[in-house]
Length: 73
Image (cartoon, rainbow, N blue to C red; front, side, top):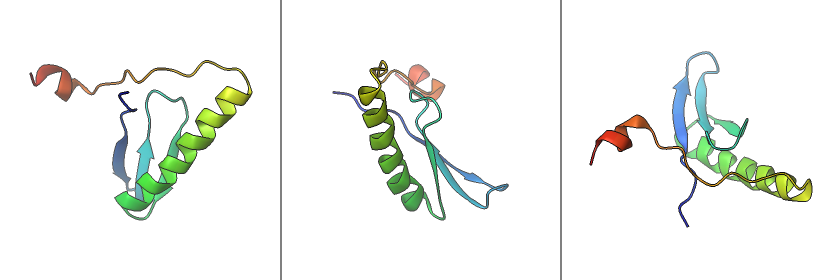
């Protein structure tokens, strides 16, 4: 199964790295390095999915693809 796309970027405002999963609404995390942001996002992703399952909410299939991947065939 294809996994969710993850964005990681530096935030001047937060003075650190933000990682997010566009397919999972409001699923994001902060870290002082890209690796830390990714590790924290993995925890957030597990919690997001567990909460959705417990509440009987739909879990989106991975579908987000940045434009760069759509045009680079």
